[in-house]
Image (tube, rainbow, N blue to C red; front, top):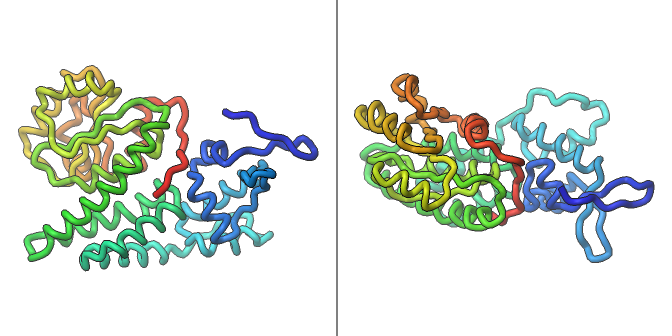
Length: 313
């Protein structure tokens, strides 16, 4: 931890990077909360750098409590400024269904400009785990339930995959250069079209502090030990959206887990569907809730700390 500065009364002041590390909120979001909504008011150095007091950090934590309960960021200031509001009430989460509906509409209309706006807005105003849990994962699930053999379904899916691959790939590139955590190798399951879940899982893992090496295509299982060694990976995470072939899940995955010298984990809908089939194996089944999956992953691949790095969206 960097040493905080001091001001009158010897009260410590913290730079924005340290506040990001302490609270898990990246600096882009902290600046947006300050500029757009007036939620926090840090002090400034003569050169204009932000410095946060302990009271500011506590306020950030209060903001997170409201957001995690579904309150739109535009309504948080009013709630924070109520002296009688000592406890968060049950929040009206209508903002999230509205944002999900907008996102679905943008994908179905192939409106990439609107998609860009919604993506940037969500990740600049809310922490990554909240964005995934409340917006992106439910939207992907809703879209996958709609997509079938209708004309245009494949085009919608491929367009969204290409969009997220570019944006999330850019975040991974910058985050990997700064992340202190172990290397996590992420590969798709053979014959599984779960690219969207893999991208969201990569975003979640990177936000935790892992250095994510993301492969676009399935790797032959016989080459997986070589990939682990060459990339210096401390673990392998697979994500899938379908049940997968029975022989793959019941025989090949457990055999691969035995061959690897690092943990092998599985997340996404396939993990929920095939949990019973893998119960007696060494494959760590993390489920399809990506927030809980990251908590379980941290037990397999411990992190010395869990910073949220200041990244652009």
